[in-house]
Image (cartoon, rainbow, N blue to C red; front, side):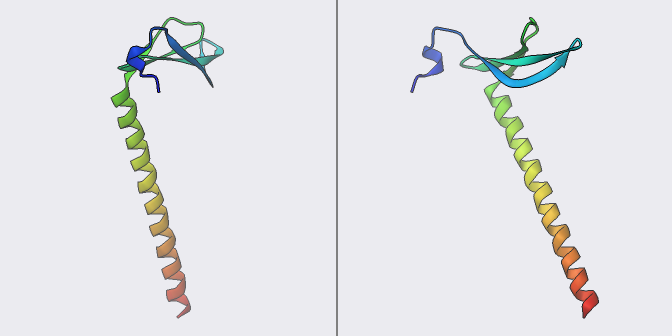
Length: 89
């Protein structure tokens, strides 16, 4: 596997996602560097930097939120089921 810090060429990926900017839908471009990623919209110069640690932390937050919401949904369904069975008895 090639390590990114050994790479001598610029690695840019045009995603299949787009964002609206100044009235036009523009594709999102991700430029990959060893210590960070740069996001920009195709045809613009504005770059948004994010570290790999920042990406990981954000993904962990989203995962934790999903798990909390899933547990809350299960608890709510269990309470509703218990309430229905209590009414029948």
